[in-house]
Image (tube, rainbow, N blue to C red; front, side):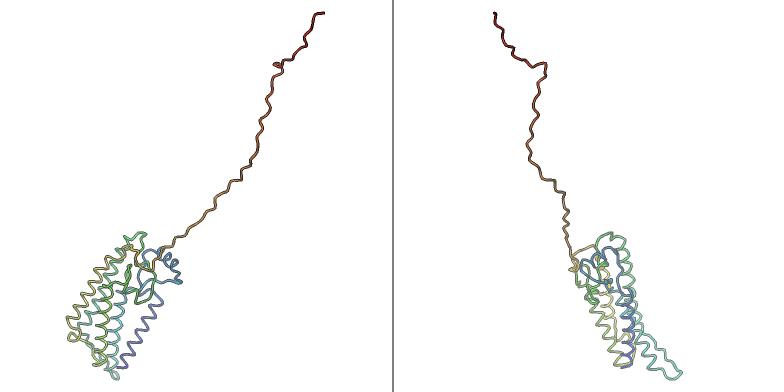
Length: 251
């Protein structure tokens, strides 16, 4: 039991470390200008793209099933005899659902990216934390993502608990058709509603509109000077000047 938990923990830590140093589990940014502007408006230093739900699910089941396989090999092998366990088909179905969801989600993202233009899409939002990222769309926490996460976690806990108690890889009697059906419906609902995401909505609380008023100084005209304008004196042509001659009286 402890060996299985140790192997599971080691693989989990390895995936977390790789994911923290890369974009392995993160969304593809549609518009890097929008991404940078949103980070600047919200004062986010060293922003990173949000985590992807479909990629996280694929990593989740990869770690669980791989850890179980390694544990069974180590636990039942002895000396030079290596035991390779049979993998029940239900494990292939679980990986297939996770891989198929990831592939279809990628196709949807590529299609939406071509039509996004300059609008703000969910893919352009910086990360707000692992759990918030995977259960949120551009309008906040969404039920279709939340139910997908819940059912994935439930089936994952059942799987791990069975391995701890029985030291066996679960088969179709443990992860039965009903659980697989729920997983399929959950994945289908997520993918169906994902087609309506990245529509350029601005309802997410992380997007704030900042209005900055720029005051441009206007040139001030010089003050008016009140001056009295004296018109020039009119001049009379010399030829028109008449002088009064003294009258002469007869002697």
